[in-house]
Amino acid sequence: ANRSPELTLQATASSEVKQDTVRISLSAEVEAADQPTAGQKLTAMLDDVAKRARDTKGVDVRTGSFNVWPNSSSGSKVSKNAGWRGQGEIILESKDFAAAAALASKLSDKTAISNISFSLSREVREAEERKLLKEAAQAFKDRALAASNAFGFSGYRLSKLELGGSGGVTPMPRMMGAMAKDASGGAGFSADVPLEAGDVTVSISVNGTIVLQSVSYTH
Image (cartoon, rainbow, N blue to C red; front, side, top):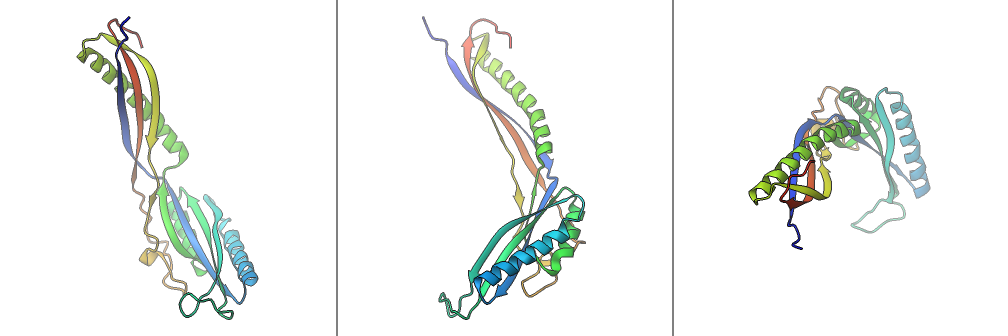
């Protein structure tokens, strides 16, 4: 018997959605004469900053990176008396941009902003993907029927389906002028500086293989 021809198709639906979550990384630095002391000082500083931060309603607080390394002198050589340096991060995440900005400003006496990024919350992304899935599925069915008719067939049946999606985090420059302070203590972050989230593209793609048929098929 002749084998029915197969056709591979793709349909995509996408939309622009305003990112609703901000992530601010705060960096803290310490110096000490030896490695254990540097680690202890850094831990104590991060614990203190985190404790002050956790009182803020609507802002999630967690620790990030933690590194201790020897200071170098005269190029790459390490001197016994050069001391040690430690650097760690406290990460603030919130849907309330104003609250996150105010907290970052409050903590600028001990920390500097090392990174700011925006993202879409899971619940908003999933709701948007559900809406887009319906659109992509309908577009796939319309395209499949049109392709069947174009090749002289009256219908099709589904043989294989795959779903895909995309949409990511938008980073901002690592050090942001008025939004950052250097290790010696600069202007610091200002809560009056607005955090502007951009749009992110959320997309759903439907990839599938159909079998062309010469009789109508109900979907």
